[in-house]
Amino acid sequence: MMFEPDRGGTPRAYVAADVPPAEATRLAVEWANGLDTSQRLGIQIPHRNVLDENVVLAELHRSGEGAFAAWRHSPANSTSKGPQLSYYPDLEHLLRLERGSPAGVALVGADETHVPWIDAYRPLLLAGAAPANLLPVIDPVVEAAVATFTNSVNSSTALIDRRDRSKVIDGLQRLRDRGYTFTAAQLVAAALRHNWQGRAAFELGGISSEVLRGARKATRERYAEGIVDQWEAAASNGRPRDAQ
Image (cartoon, rainbow, N blue to C red):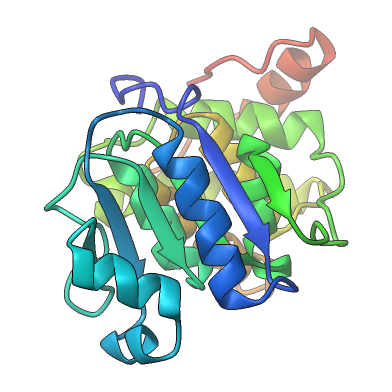
């Protein structure tokens, strides 16, 4: 993860789900075009039928101003490196846009399910009411653990690699056994703050959900004994650093 391109400076904005779709799309497009990247706007939609339901999207399609991709065919629009507009995505598809280095990301239809992305990046709210259920502050010891996970995971394979996955599970189980509390959403947000690819951050949330259900999962790759003590020390010093 430490060799990933820095995504922290990517411009991001969103329109809340209580804004009508056509108006929300118009606002997002205006914001994206205002970035002045001289690159074509990429637009991710769930299916082509939305072009019949949204006049703004239909016009963008007719004019050729937007490069469209349906999620089932392309989770991230490879035909445009410009700003990316994600239209009513689930969290997984939204986070897949964070794999590369888009010129900007605009979310249309934000709700509580997108809170990890909002919490991590603090995007600009263009219109509507921000989701009410913001995440509680993550325990600094858990944040220190995520910092360690960051330098333990191969960025090219993320948590698909069995060894990386095993080690992260081991760390989460140790935190749970020591009484530390966390949620999947908190870990997704923390991973994004540590510059994880969106896909990998989403997978971390899925793994944490399994651990939180209480099942003891076997792990072949483990951290050294005393790892939680190291995380506690790092947290007490205000520096969630890597540990072995």
